[in-house]
Image (cartoon, one colour):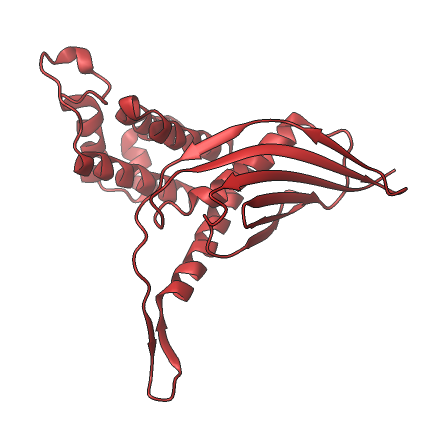
Length: 248
């Protein structure tokens, strides 16, 4: 009889998170720490469905994606291994292989300020860690509940993983949102996103003569998007993701 089911992924770099992350969601206790992401089921399951595996992977991906505004390097998830612990002490291990890549932003220096008595009055690392935990919780909960959220996260991931078509994939995000809400105007209103931001991503993806854009055949002379244009497009896409996650 199976007494405990653990699903274990590995993520790199192992220092991607500044602190361990733990949550209980969709019938599992999930922990990310030092390069290991473990989902321990509250009720053991053997055999285990691919659909539930994919859901837990989506939650783990969401937690790491929530670090997007903090670091400037990709992460990779591999695995999982499925550990089934039996009542007689026997442990069986099944392996399923997969990987996910995503790019994030720049880490800023930390500030620690104390008063004359040594009391901490400003600790930007502690503030950032608290904000990142809240952000990770929001992303994990939304990914667990919504297939649309998982679809949006996938478009962002593919955009970073396929830089030659980055703007094509980023523009899938407002396209999906417009489809979900019925049209772009309703999507903007529901998410509190200005028309200027929405239009700017459309301009970069559809109208500018950019090699990374959607309508390259419309222009006779093309150029690569600048670093600032890519950064602008990513930030608008991230704003859309963050805004939609809050509605789930």
